[in-house]
Length: 127
Image (cartoon, rainbow, N blue to C red):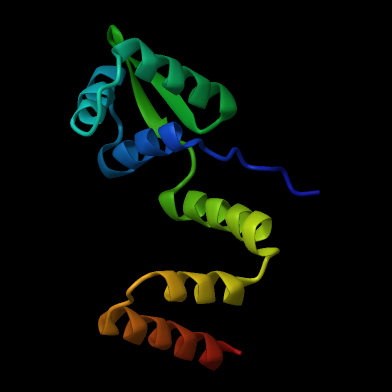
């Protein structure tokens, strides 16, 4: 049986995105970056990060009077887990259902369509 990896909440994902681009960071540094996009209290950011550490999404190491925070899982792995969960819960595991919904709801550029075709061609070559 495979061990379930923790799935981040929206607030946790914001922190993970900041860390993936800049790690390691202190709570103060993460809080400052969060405040660039929304009003969030320092203690709120700290509490979310403490919970993320307990869940196994972050690890922290002492650094003088502060702690440095690091992500536990790479960005691509976390995105893949989130997508798998979304795909299963929303589209009963149907990747084609997801793609058809996505392309039907959004104006897709010619460049994006060409990239999708290229990916499909590469997948066909591997089979």
